[in-house]
Length: 412
Image (cartoon, rainbow, N blue to C red):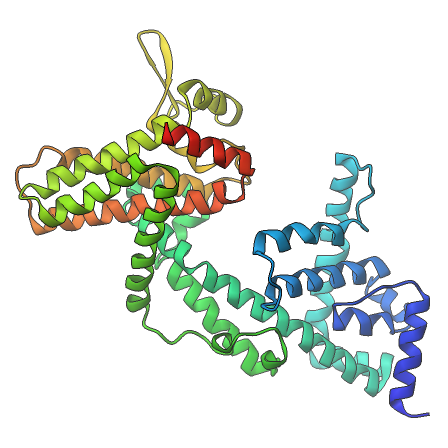
């Protein structure tokens, strides 16, 4: 009997076990390995199903032939996880599932995939499964790895505008406030440089391992790392961010859109452009934060998420009032509870408050020096960064009804 016939019989046997592994080449091949061998690495049927589900989700998101919007594709992925979560599930059961994935899937899979790449690991697996099976396992690993490399590269490049937006925000955050940014404070060259470095690292991994990217759901420009100069791409992306911020703000409020345009017109045409542009920036920030949420709503958000933090509340004439930072942070999170430490939202919030504070100092200037103009450009870049980040990252994934409520408030 030839090798291909054995391969077909093995697949039939795997199917008889009830494992419906349709997306991960590696999971399918591992399912054909003798159970006693898999048990040595804690590669249970459940682990293979999780692996197959993850690769399947990646395929759905990468498939350019799928006409559905990305939001609809993401929504469709829920059913893929239903096999792991019963219809009636408690928070305790979800917590146990997450713990299982962390302990039995992520840790164990990382351990054996790292070990198998060593000389000793290769020899061990060759003895356990034989040459033919080992070759199919390595090919399957390369196939799945290609998808993950393409997914990582595409995600990095889709995130480049946000990286520039965040870099523009971080640029004006005072050194004394960077301690509140957590791990972001340690990034010296900026998020864009980090993304560039990761993109180049993927090339080195592909060159070293021979992962077949051309066989994955890859676009032509994803076959190799970016070669465009960092400075040039920053300028291009800033132009895109300017257009995007105008478009997003215009979709929310004509009044806010006019404030942004007033800033541009003042610097371009007015003799006292610095003063007028600074005033437009301040008016934009104040109008946005004042109309998005009432003071009572912001105070309620603070009491639930930042209780006792004096930087979020002040008292005037015996009445508690939210600070600008509280308003900006509440908006940055779309009025929701922060996930994790909220370092990104904190970064853009601090930058917006600093932009407004610096603009306040320029508001009454009679001069319009080149340095003042450059400072105003930096302040507006940070403001646009705040707008694009919050409307993409927080409001972009919020309940559509919440976004429509914001639009109605700002348009009033």
